[in-house]
Image (cartoon, rainbow, N blue to C red; front, side, top):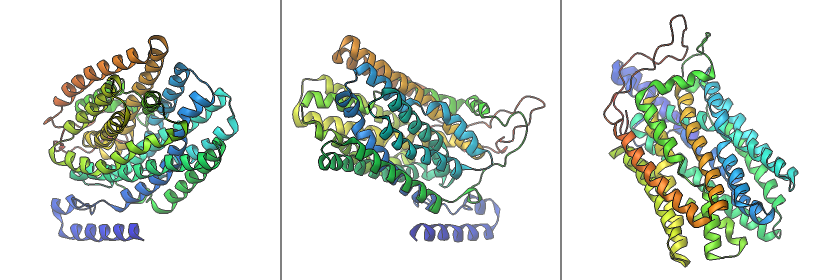
Length: 460
């Protein structure tokens, strides 16, 4: 009811703005006032909340299930963790292209949510077979890869340019509420069922399916979105999304995200290190992500609003500085409550200052009709670099020990932050050009409108 009322108010303002005529009416024509989050963003936030309960229930227990339940080595776990975070890379471009072509953002996103929900049953059927577990994880991550770019494109298309940080912050805060509830539900189930992982997978599947139903019922479809119409021709292929890298500002944002991602160790490794350092009971392990999620939930909206006001480059780099602080804390001889609180606080700040802020940073560089494709390119580079980071950290841990591996990660992140700062500095104040025209004889159905782009905050 609230979502419907929000959209009704937005449409009323849209009609009023159009009646005034002129460019001013067009500027307010989508009913997007500064400081107000639109109905589609709230609806997607609810869907993400429910879906994140499903996914985080599984993510919270997988490290224990792999390392302690199945006895995998750090190298094997690093491979599976990299697969969990990087398998999305190979379908993101296809998902973004399919969403942009004809404005099928809702349909493509819904397909990804459904595939992720079904993957929970795959984990249930796999038993202890590593190949079966890997296939189920790949299916879950493929679903996430398909849905993420269309979902973020829906958020950006439904929000005003000067409120992108706030919109993504509100969505991420709702998403993180699910991340808080998921590990808590997993912990309760493991406690009640005496470590029965099957029960966690079944309940996770039910929540995932419920999220799909919410998407179908409450998220608006293509008729409500300002997207470019499809068209025939050789340019209408997924690989054409890569032509967006010809936009200098967007190319530098992608390069910075990939560079920083290559030095980002997965959360699961850091939680395992905490468990080993503090030597607490395994049954408490699923609660570790709760600390991170609580900090993320508290800071996502304020950091998003701050990024809208002061520019998005600074908060994005500061977030990676917080991740570096987590590495340093784990290297120091500190222990007990100070180590636990410090690492979880640093991880929460890292996600609050980077996840939604990166999408807001890249959005002004992209034309509306190719928004999903551009975000898919950005997320693909970041996912591939994080896959390499997880696999490399697991190999270093196995070969050299945890101290040497974590030292290498800290040094790599220090260099990456400096490189990211240099890349993003050169984007500030530079107008973003239109997407380059296709070769003679080729007609690009997704060509951006030929109008000047206003310089965005923190990039261009």
